[in-house]
Image (cartoon, rainbow, N blue to C red; front, side, top):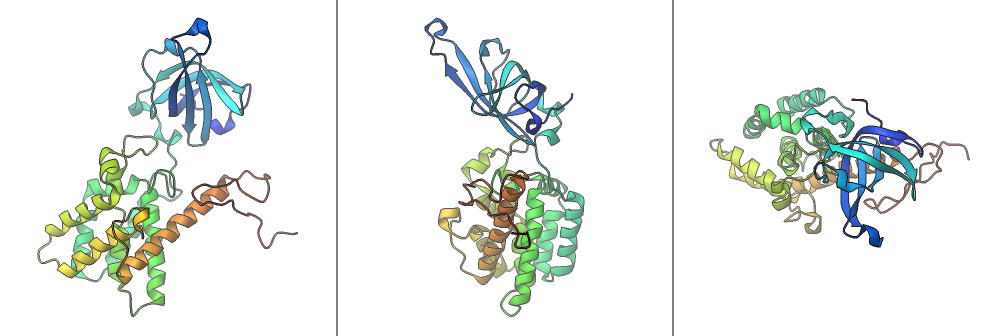
Amino acid sequence: MKKQLIKNLRVGDEVETQVLVLECSKAAFSAPHRAGEYYLKLLFGDVSGSIKGIMWDAGQLKEPIQKGDVVFIRGEVSDYHGPQVVVGDMRKLDPAKVNRSFFQPVSERDPKEMLQELKQIIGSDIKDPHLKLLLFSFFNDAEFVRRFALAPAARTIHHNYVSGLLEHTLEVIAICKDLVKLYPAQLQLDLLITGAILHDIGKIEEYDPASFSFEFSDRGKLIGHISIGKEMLDQKIAQIPDFPARLKLELEHMILTHHGAREWGSPEVPKTIHAFTLFHADLVSARLNQFIKVMEKHPPGAGDWTEWDRFLDRSIYLKSATDPD
């Protein structure tokens, strides 16, 4: 089935394509002769962007439409405070038969290459036998590796794409390695790298793998990836004979505190140098990815400033110091 990308739709275009329903709500008609009838206000999305939608004759739908559905629509792009698809026909599609790449952005890096890089790091940089055995217990598990390699690192904030978790993890490791070079007497490389590898493992269960828009799973909503990650860590350590209690406590603390502050979701603040270092490495990776995403979304020729980003709480100045005045 041919796919029209949302970013290419213009006012006046006829639309026959697949879209992801990002928002869907009913609204009642105000006209007396249509009392009791309703229309649908929609927001459609795909990998290229989003567009508003409206379906006036919602009564013709054969089955209810809700947020998260992939649908085939027919209609026309009109102008109502910006482009809007006036939908004439809409039907739900079987998600198993949909090309997910139309709706889920993917890391620019090959996940197989990233996994190979991660396994090389475990093999070469992890010297402590207990830490190496712990990491092997995770990465010799084929199902864990599959989910870890495909998971996003977030829904919206940073690395929010397929394999984003793996890409983010490698960035955090690289930052940690540089910090160890600056503070070799205070930081233990293999302990810090182990914390970097494991700090977000709970995210493989935090997001619903069937969702096209990286919605939270029930466990993700009720428990969260920090607590899930600690559970996963404790389960693996329990299977390793004579795992040192001090290492277990340090790794638990690193996972529980990697958001850095209680108001950011950590149940405790970092109180060891390894936890403190991991928090800052994690933050740098996340914030720079956010920053770059905002820069890349800015249309060419649209000025020297991006639009205001509510997550970064700023707009970004794009003109390079080497550009001519």
